[in-house]
Length: 283
Ligand code: AMP
Ligand code: ZN
Ligand code: FE
Ligand code: FE
Image (cartoon, rainbow, N blue to C red):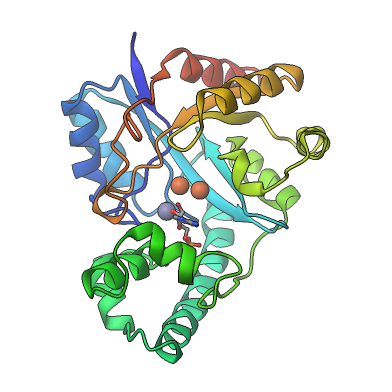
């Protein structure tokens, strides 16, 4: 079976590989296609697309936008976007500014907890790309404040934890519209992070998002159990959403996740990308 990975991060956001390095890795391990989906930025796409062209590798331009949602977090992936769209770029710039004001606040909260992490340290880990919480987690791990990446999130950085700082986000409807306006297909990422425990609540949300332009549902994901994948596939069918999947690879900033393989059992079939491309043609 031809395998793909439709959810990956580069140094343009909080991954550790540069866009060309990531494309090289995907090509080396034999993936048939990959999407680059950095958080709130298109900055890695030109370089990734260029390397993919040189290698004859199929690369899908993407993005991952954080939307405003409670109780958990909502991430919306955008696929097959026009990454030269000025409107998309300018709206994403606003989200990046929100990160710039947030990061020093996270550092200050960690400092108050006795865990000194300077902006220079996280910026060094970020290597020039935009800083996010995984960079804080990496520094905390390197300095021995925590013994795992997960511990850094669970005890300090996760929503509701003592060093968590909120940031401005687009509403779900605005994030969907923004991706649509850039010619892309919006897909709801890792649905379990929404923390909607009642199945009926997730169904209501999907119906609502579908009306606002949602095109797909991320069903295959590193942290999904086989049962979750099965349930999400059924929901995708019920709401006529294209199933998609990916590892959420971040390289050394999330070492337990392997490109294309997730925690080891992930296998995303190429057919899903064919389905996405068919939906794009119908636009
Ligand atoms: P940020 O963009 O700074 O909000 O950070 C988002 C990144 O943090 C994403 O790559 C997530 O995969 C990661 N992340 C968010 N929450 C957790 C968590 N509880 N455990 C591990 N990683 C997380
Ligand atoms: Zn990330
Ligand atoms: Fe995400
Ligand atoms: Fe992601």
